[in-house]
Image (tube, rainbow, N blue to C red):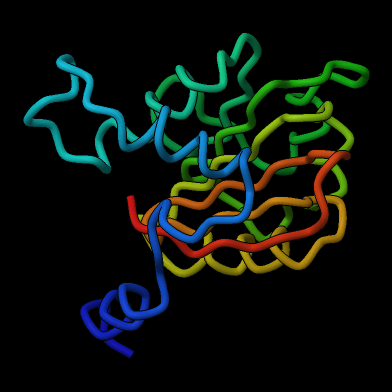
Length: 167
């Protein structure tokens, strides 16, 4: 399926804040992503998505898994990067080299209640396979597909729900 057809199918299935029955996700959308903030005016939503999420959730500890830039790592070193016993507010998966080797259980062990995994899905199908593993894992209770990005939350007070939403 072409990228255009895939996106059109996503738009048909997706929604926005209207009709959401999760106060947590509703707040994330209306106060985090959809709110008009002067510093984001004129910028593409895909460029400021992660910044808005990190700001709204007040992330203090962030683990970045990326194959590009100074923070690049090999996923085989995931256990050494995610410090044992350290609980992260957010784990951002940009473009790791060996994305197939990321185990959702290893991510869950590095998360506390209300932690989030942010998956950048803009560059290929490898991140999509990881996304489907995470989405189907029972440890992640709230998952949100934004097409270009995906969020997975570990929240003990919420039943497992999946949302397909527009940015």
